[in-house]
Image 1 (spheres, rainbow, N blue to C red):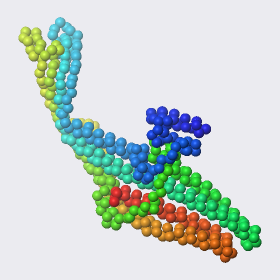
Image 2: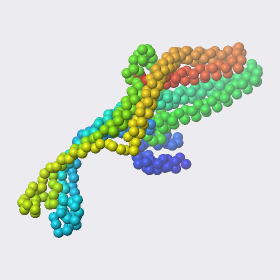
Image 3: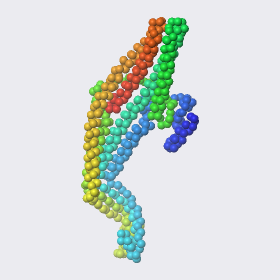
Length: 453
């Protein structure tokens, strides 16, 4: 069954036009299905930075934001090209049915045979084209700001997935420890019961505790496997479980002062830049709509051959003289918009509506940025402050379990006290791990507004 599923994945990759799973294996992106495949080679050890680097290449929403920025940049180049003169080469042959004269039957033709081979320099002068270029630049700035927002959002997503996997591994280790201690306590209670030192109810309570911890360990393993799969899907271009993560949660970075965070947010906030760029783009759209009512001028300069013979020099049968076919011509066209059945006015009204919406969104974005900065900073500061307390609680819970177990063996504590001490230790260790994850996510969220400190 696993082999069939692997073949199915390979077929999907082939349909998508990417490398086969065999080639991906050689590039450290091996498709792994099942324990036998996962053990085929040593797992890749990933740090958070490694995971971010891989996610930059493979996360679709982030890549979509970069694609939009790239498209906007190319549209700016196209709009700029519309302001500059361009050169084309025209080659044409015209034939009309003859009528015994030099002109032929169709009056629009210059002769029975007409050859055109010329260069054309074209320049369009229009205030609307200039406004469209400024609009394209504004939309490029907006796309750039959105790509930066996507970059920082990706950091939050990967950080959460990465450390969720780390925490899941910790909780699984905690569940293993708790299951081993529960089993050990069950053995102690059974031995003490055989010696007549404790009641049978203690053995029952210890057995229930051992069973509960075994179930908790199975759930912890399930959560660890699930988080491992989620992270793998996020950072690898193919299905891959053959990797491990580095637990660096004890490396706690300092929280800057609020004044420093506020200063960084004022200079490095992509959400503010996006809101301002959106407002600027709306203003430019109004300008484009207004300029649609103004005249435009087109200039064309032609140089080459437009004659009855495809030659530099020709013969004029009317005058009987040799003439030179190679020459130039120029045209100027002025276009005045007169009537468009209300299309221009509708475009202007639509642009004004979008401008008003952009003003509302800018005002809301400014308020939300201030609120988010205060909220994210408070979360980071609080979660950092609580880490020491959570660590101390976990240490105290471990010492409490050790002392309670000794007291139980000496007949000074009850089975309920031992079970309560075991549960307290598990809860305290898991709470400490959750606190470390909370702090990392709080810092990642804060840096979406401030950038790296």
